[in-house]
Amino acid sequence: MTKVLSLMSVRKVGLAASALAGTVILITSCTSPVDRFIFLDDAGGGGVFVEPDSEAPIATPDAASLLCVGTTCPEGFATCAKQNGPAYKCGTDLKRDTDHCGACGNKCLHYGRIHMTSRCVEGGCELECWSPKSPGDEGEWRNCNGRVDDGCEVDIHSDAKNCGACGNACANGTPCIEGKCGCPAGQIVCDGACTDPLHDDFNCGGCGIMCDPGDGACNLPWTAYYGCGNGVCGTPKCQGTRGDCNQDLGDPQCNTDGCEVEDIAFDPDNCGGCGIKCKTEDGEMCINGSNGSYCAVQCVGKGMTFCPLLGCRDFLNDPTACGSCTNGCPEAGPNQLRACRKGLCALDCLPGFGDCNGDPSDGCETNLLAHPGNCGACGNACDVTAGQPCIHGKCLMTECSADGGVN
Image (cartoon, rainbow, N blue to C red; front, side, top):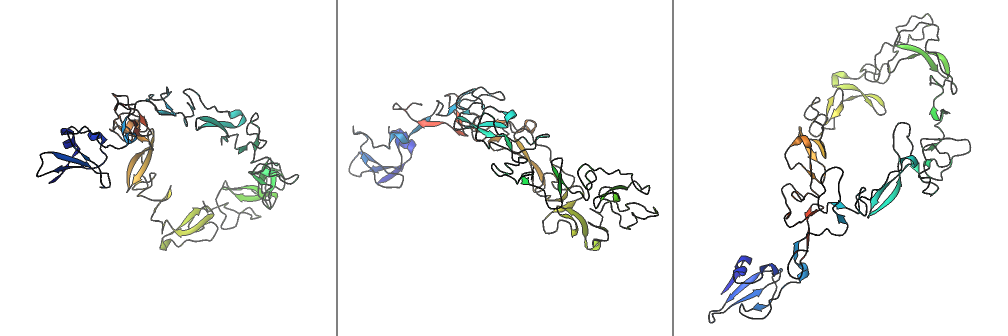
């Protein structure tokens, strides 16, 4: 008769269950009172017979495949003091942490004055260029001379010898404007920027020629003023996006109502220009797009709904208009992102974080990658009593020592 035993059954007869890699089968003989055990591999293949009372050693898997609770930080990890938040055991990745790169307290520095910074790569701080994109410094900085002492010394947005890329020189006398040599056809360079001298009220016909908005034959209504037209000052013009659709602005007798159309960018009777009328009876509206205004049925074919102040919005997934034009989801807390799912607002945790205390006011407060009581998921606790750390969301396990203890 053949019986299949569980590991618990094996323990009861004195065998080392932790050493078994496959199935244990009990062989009972009808003619002998002695039971025999056979150990099968994971695939169900053959093994060896063992007599329970025999002194012969039991066949076991390679000891290297057995794992025990780990308590010593693996290579590349350490317990470093944190400025913000607790210092978890082995919670610092010395290969990637810019505050503790290679060793606790070894901070990768920032060199803003020379447009350089550094980050931690495999335990070493590596320098790289830094472009702040802040008011007064809109440059794109590069280290074109290959030296470190002067940092990233070239702004490729404006350097004529390195325009758009290191070594890309513009022709003599041609400036570099926003990473391109020279200006588009019909434009000139004034104060380091490209401008249209035919219509620029501050550079009319040439750089520095500013038009006087009141310098004209008529006393224009507030909706209009005198500015630059065809490179000459004194041309009546509309304020902003207003329009002179009855074309009386240049009346020599000064009989004008100015620019009577409030906004040709959104006026359905003058959409993008005077006389361009949208078919409002068919649901068309005047839409202001990236290439100007045009008549169209709002949001058709996109599965969206038109909101007057927001444009086309997906009520099922858009957190700025979740379920309706006026329902903006609440702002996210620390380590959170706001989301909209099927028209209902939600707060999602950033990867590696969890809201383990169930309190939305402090966001996703738990670092699931390092917290030993919530390792990889809320409530998944490591053996804190033994000193087992959480490494990248997994409780540390290591090969067992020769005596079966932890390492």
